[in-house]
Amino acid sequence: MRNLQEYRRRIRAVKDLIQVTKAMKTVSAARLRRTQNKVINFKPYAVRIKYMLAHLASAIPQAHPLLGETEEKNPLLLVISADKGLCGSFNYNVIKEAERFIKEREGNLHLMVVGRKGEEGLKRVHPIEKTYKHIFVKLNFSHAMEITKALLRGFEEKKWDSVFITYTQFFSVGKYYPTTERFIPIEKVEEEEMEEYIYEPNVDMVVEQLIKHYIELEVWRILLESSTAENAARMIAMDQATRNAQDMVRNLTLEMNKLRQEKITKELLDIVTAIEAMKKSQA
Image 1 (cartoon, rainbow, N blue to C red):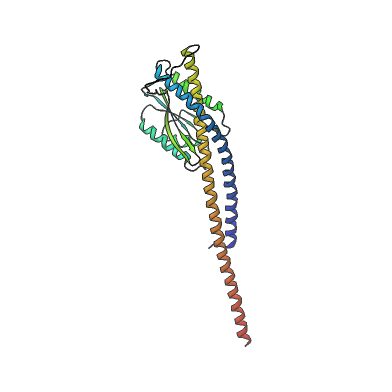
Image 2 (image 1 turned 120 degrees about the vertical axis):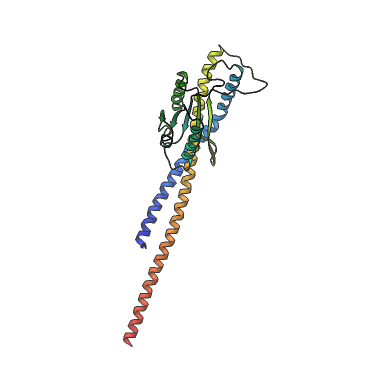
C-alpha cells in the first residue's frame, strides 16, 4: 500500500511531465503554423507546373525520358518519415504504407528513406540504399535539390526506370493520410483538347529546365507536407498526453486525499479510544 510520500512524489513527477508535454505542444503548434502557410501558398504554383508538364508529356511523349510511360521493371521507392517519435501513429502509418508497396513490388526494388524512424522500421524489410537524416531540424530548399539530384542521377545511370514516393499527404490539422504516388516519369493527361504552347528558344531546352524545376518543386512540396503533418500529429499527441497526465494527477490526488482521510480518521479513533480508556480507569 502506498503512503502519502509516494503519492506526493508521483504527483510531482506527473506535473513535471505535463510541463514537458505542454511545451512540446506549443513548439509543434508554432512549427505547424509556419509550414502550413508555406504549403498553402506553394500548392497552386506546384499544381500549375504539374499540369503543364502532364500536358507536355501527352503532346510530345518522346521529348524527354522522364515524360510518358515506362515498364517499371526497376522502380525506386522514396519514403518520407520523421527523425523523431512522440507524434502518434505518424511514422507507423508511413512505414506500413511503404511495406505494402514493397510487398506488391517484389523483385528488383530500390529503396531510399528520409528520416531516422523510416530507416529503423524498413531496414528489416528491404535493403536501404541511402538515408537522409535530420533534414527536418531546419528544412530548406537545398534539401529538395539534394534529393532531386540523387533521383535524377540514378535515372540517368539507369539504376531505376521509375520513382515512387511514400509520404503523408496533408489536408488539415486533423486530416492527413499516408499515400504512395508515382513521381517520375510524369504521367500523361488524356484529354480531347490539349493546350498549345510556344517553346522558346527550343523544345529540348524548355523541357529540360522545366522538368528539373518541377521535380525540385515537387520534392520540396512533399517535404513540406510531410513536415506539416508530422507537426500536426505531434501537437495532437502532446495535447492528448497532457490531458491524460492531468487526469492522472486528479486520480492520484483523490487517492491521496482518501488515504489522508483514512489516516486522520484512524488517528481520531485512537484518540477517542484512549480517552475512553482513561475515563474507565479513573472511574
